Length: 225
Ligand SMILES: [Zn+2]
Image (cartoon, rainbow, N blue to C red; front, side, top):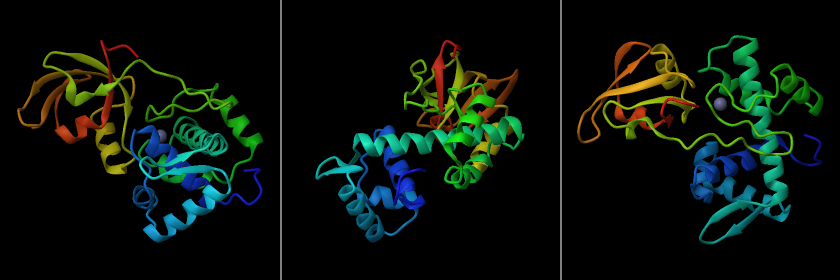
């Protein structure tokens, strides 16, 4: 990125803070450390430096938040990440469970010109293979119809998968193996009590889905997208 002194680590921190905040979580130093797999001491250190650089603001009760400058950079990194995921999946035909790790590296290596070329090649997409919104050039996010977890559907209800809220390869591979991708319609046939498994119908086949997995799938009611 064309910002002097802004290393890959800086960008990763800003992105991690953005992702925590966009999930409605508090970006505390320990949450940031956990998200990035670093020690709490290094997270505290970096938070201090980013705050001195005017990219984040710290408040004792709400943890860390991005300043407009910090948000601008975070959205740019997220845009590159999700564009690269879609490029790898759609054009290079890599499975959706392996593109996240690759994009983590490639997102830091591409220029504005390459970012533009990828966006153009893909037709200025609004969503990545996991249903995550791709920020536009000016940082705007497409708002999709209200989503709720698949686990919240009532028996007999049909909805369309909009987004999967996991980057875990094994879970993604499993979802793929039963045909559960954004755009797929799912009907709940049975719900076991006390957060037990769900029986769902997907592509004309009945499948058992663990409650915890169903919770990480965002659907839009009525089967539309
Ligand atoms: Zn993604």
